[in-house]
Amino acid sequence: QVQLVESGGGLVQAGGSLRLSCAASSRGRIFSTYAMGWFRQAPGKEREFVAAVTWTAGRTYYGDSVKGRITISRDAAENTVYLQMNSLKPEDTAVYYCAAARGPPITTPSTYNSWGQGTQVTVSS
Image 1: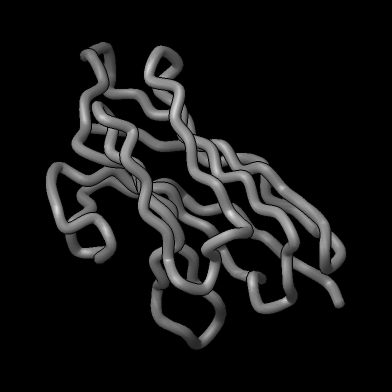
Image 2 (image 1 turned 90 degrees about the vertical axis):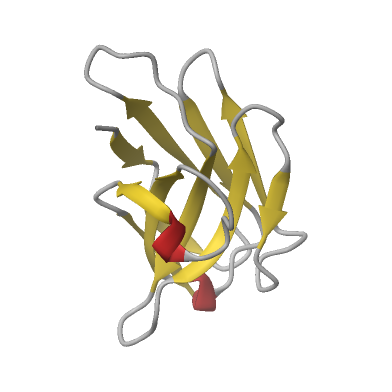
């Protein structure tokens, strides 16, 4: 079973930046996954795909609402995935979740079998 722990959320003004981290572990076993992704969920809204990266090839995918402002990366040696968010907007306010997927498609929440507890990102106007 994979454990995921997010960090880096907080309060930032519009136009600012935040970097989220997600550390993965698998209880003494070698961590392996098809892809890691970030989703977000605002109050009263469905969980939204933000970005994903395939673990071996490092191919990246982004949601339309964040393209050009957010970059996902991974450090396979550290079992960590990052989400660099720039030019933040109030509509980016949400709880951001890190997740691990065993296979494609990697833009839908149902593909992911392990989830972190989430980290709050609040962007003030």
